[in-house]
Image (tube, rainbow, N blue to C red; front, side):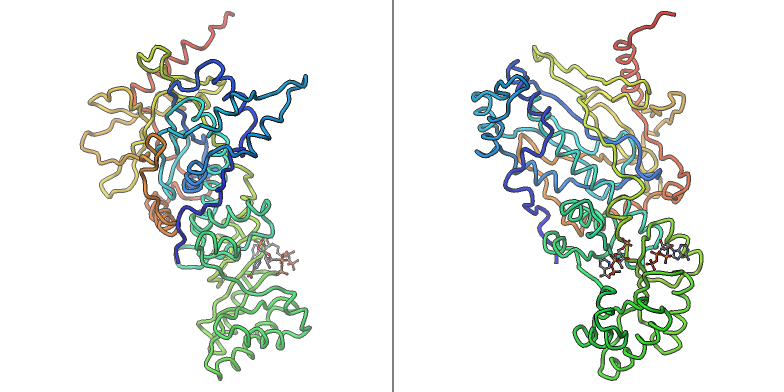
Length: 496
Ligand SMILES: Nc1ncnc2c1ncn2[C@@H]1O[C@H](COP(=O)(O)OP(=O)(O)OP(=O)(O)O)[C@@H](O)[C@H]1O
Ligand SMILES: O=P(O)(O)OC[C@H]1O[C@H](OP(=O)(O)OP(=O)(O)O)[C@H](O)[C@@H]1O
Ligand SMILES: O=C(O)c1cccnc1
């Protein structure tokens, strides 16, 4: 079953899911008469998470849902009207609140499809429209895209470790960052490569397959493994996975086999056993041998216990016979990297006299952190096998030269000339035009399939966990030169 991609989770409007400063700036822009100056913002991250070579873009469908439901309700406005500054004065006057009440979303949004592999500095979302509106989107878009992209990428790495045919069950809800953290993580984990979740709400909301085994408490409540397994088999004769490690794992496997024989006599097969402690490589090999010996060659071996991609890789190298991986805490909390540092930066502003664009830049001590001006598009060049070769960021508001050269923004001497016949695709596609959605979103299952094709299309050197190869992402030469000019124009010259 595929749920509709727009879940309505963010309806009614969650307009107040924002930082106060978005609203104080909005008021300021309105007061200055700047609210309708046309602006362009880009949402991007600078470095792929987990010291990896890529990220899997995610969160767009949630962002679309939020934007489509964006409006300030009576309650929202009453609350904003009640806010007071430090001297007790009204923070937002009634005329401005009335403006917010009437506000209609009219921006253009272009975005990278969920599941697409992306790299540092590449806009995942481009928002173009009235300055006040485009600014108001910042916090919610970042909250949604940063977390979804982080978890989808983690899941893709776990999939990399398990290989394509093993099952990955996401078990994280109990260790997640609250209800919404758990729900969002289940969605992103599925998008990034998990096969199913134990999170029932995520199943209902997003159509993700729900799966599970049973807890130690089930065995403990019977006090006897054979009885516990028989009772579970009675309830779910065709879907039983017995947790065998409550007392002694190998003894537990033998008891599971005993019950499995009784099940077989009644025409049912034991689906699997689960290991949740001890040496998972050794125990899974032993369990496989005992199961096979007893004629239960199809019974799956599920393992859980703080699993993550490096541990799974190691278990595989140790010859573990695990074919289903239950992964919780490390996946849904992105344990080794708490957040993706995506940012939302102003890149262009229509001149006050409407005579063209001012391209804007945020300087930084590090050139790599200096923002990229323009109305950007990401062009992905493909090699002769149709696999990604290099990405080019270019300014759609300036003409492209005939000879295209990519320049690495972190090292201006690294360049790549593009042959004119090189095939490419543009990653940012129209999602909203003048506030109306123009893109039919794929289902979550379609985005998941897209993510798997995308990750597979990357060279293994970019997918590896340790010191991955850096995928070339360059600025088109004229954009790079323009950016350097802007940096020099804005940067004060220091005297010695
Ligand atoms: N063969 C192995 N190689 C590397 N790490 C392993 C191996 N087998 C298990 N581990 C991991 O080692 C960690 C500790 O395992 P252990 O069974 O001691 O965990 P535990 O949580 O303390 O056990 P328990 O659930 O009994 O309290 C877990 O993260 C587990 O996944
Ligand atoms: O280790 P994770 O990757 O987070 O996977 C989820 C964990 O949650 C459960 O343990 P818990 O001790 O909470 O319950 P249990 O008694 O059912 O084992 C399960 O047995 C896993 O070990
Ligand atoms: O179904 C399971 O086995 C399960 C669910 C949540 C957490 N740990 C295990």
